[in-house]
Image 1 (spheres, rainbow, N blue to C red):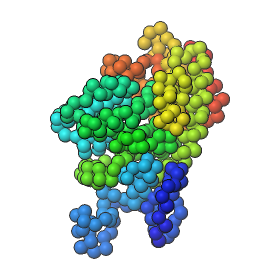
Image 2: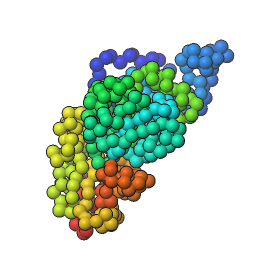
Image 3: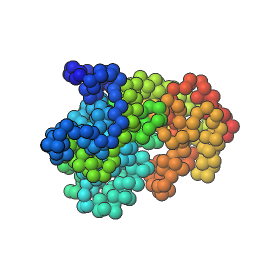
Length: 403
């Protein structure tokens, strides 16, 4: 019972609800969850052709599943790419991309403000296999250009960054990468396709941690790479088949359904985050607020151009302090005073989550790396959820007003 093909030109909000594989013979309206590790083959000849890659068809859970395919098709449609490859987590997506595209002797340039685990993976783990890398300031286009070498194969940026919400010029980095014969990958976790579509600005690959806003309720782990079909088929798929970095059907189904409400969730959370950031900026115990939607943000104008005029739902702020030791103690006091909001390192949830990056997401970096990334001991990240704004403010004031 195949559904009619979707017409061209649909808006992302419609694609987020309607893109999926064909319905089964039962005509279900909500996409089916196929919990199976294997698939029965019609006959031995067709089985051989499918396992040999000569004909499309599901064979084994490690190489494909209809529910996972629906998630991949939907996310690719929303990002505007030809295809997508789902993975077990966001870090699995980074691992899959690097294993698929890099080899010993290659060089990678990445932002020094990226997620801590990403920096450790590229800067330390892949160095053991002969892949060289250079970290550069996120917003310094000249530094990116100066770091390019003849063997540079990949530029990797995260915009906005975690947790300082620094914004890079995607189009400028894309032109730079292509002039050097390299690829540009953009981590679009914070903005999501609801606010920003990096491929329209020249990016080659879009990486996601589906654990965050794509799921939207903090339920499952998931990741994805959105890219041209040839890259997904010829580069990513062979490595995934052999490595097993696959997304489970259940997790794919959860995130698939999460995509349906992504637009309205992110709109509401971003509006609340903007108001919350303005309020924090006026509090006497706050030294600085990092939020792209504020005019005080160094890349405010660029962010508004790239992110549909919206600042997103994540912000961070520094508490006032006279020393790193005092800053850490004051940040901990604010976090320990919470009674409604959650002390939790995830983000993108309907619940507002606060974290101390210097001791969590960036805790395994050296102090020099943290300082280069601007991660101080008094920094608190806030991923704004859907609670009433007055309750959010009151909960944070328990700590801020008693410092």
